[in-house]
Amino acid sequence: MKATEVKIRQALDAGESYVDPAFLLVETLLGDDGETVTTIEHLATYVVNGRSRWKITTVGQSVPLSHAGALEWAVSFAAAHDIPIVYQRDDSRAYRQAAAPSAVASSVAK
Image (cartoon, rainbow, N blue to C red; front, side, top):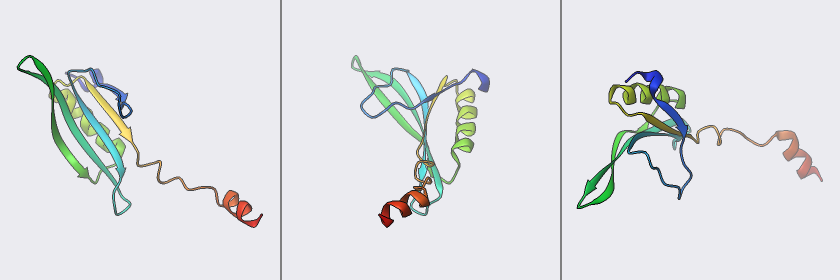
């Protein structure tokens, strides 16, 4: 499979169910030291006694890698292993945005 054939989608919210039989999940957040870390997992369904089960294989956990770098690596991995979909969640940027100093200062001054 070519990397250009791999579909990149946003990860589902908690409580929602994935229906794809196999995919990679790329999740990036800030580590304890404030640096960006990424976890990449391969998820695949298989059948045991007539029931579908998920098999989760961690490809990399808490790897010091930016989201863009991790996503590029995941797409390459997915293409090499015929995994058609990569889901992504980037929570590293949400913590880097601080409130505007002027808004905080003006609310304290009142």
